[in-house]
Length: 177
Image 1 (cartoon, one colour):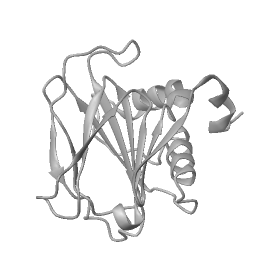
Image 2 (spheres, one colour; image 1 turned 45 degrees about the vertical axis):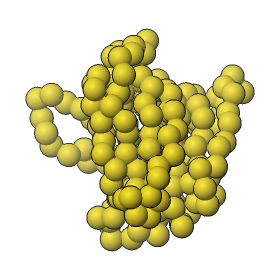
Image 3 (cartoon, one colour; image 1 turned 180 degrees about the horizontal axis):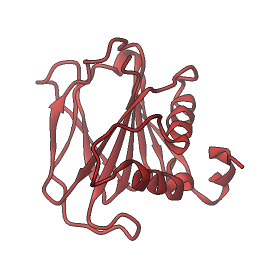
Image 4 (cartoon, rainbow, N blue to C red; image 1 turned 180 degrees about the vertical axis):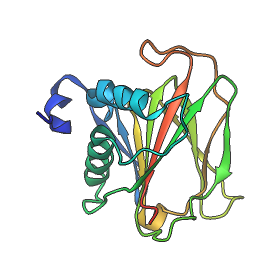
């Protein structure tokens, strides 16, 4: 039986925050699916093999399409997911995601584990970036006029999450092909 992503939302306080036109943070959106996501991560991250997975796990696809639809991108279906695990002090400098063939499709970024400070800048690297604290289960979606905005993550501070440990896991979904 496949559960609908929205079946478990009654126990979670969801908030939607606009970062600007085309950019939204869905607070706690991934929490109802955290068990399925972490289980799927164990299946796709195999320390013995670096072979790519044959298809995106259902839990990943459900979350990415559901979050995108909630943010106004109802036709979005990702075909790629970049998985990053960050430790204490790790950071991601300001950059644009512009290697995809179709930049009309949004980026969906899921935060699991310890908190992070997400930087969301403008269309030029020198534009001032706003700081957005992301916690376990938060999802950021940016597309349309926000699709090529610079973004990054400040160095992670020490922390611990009961399900993920001393790490932050980020799932970044995109339409690559």
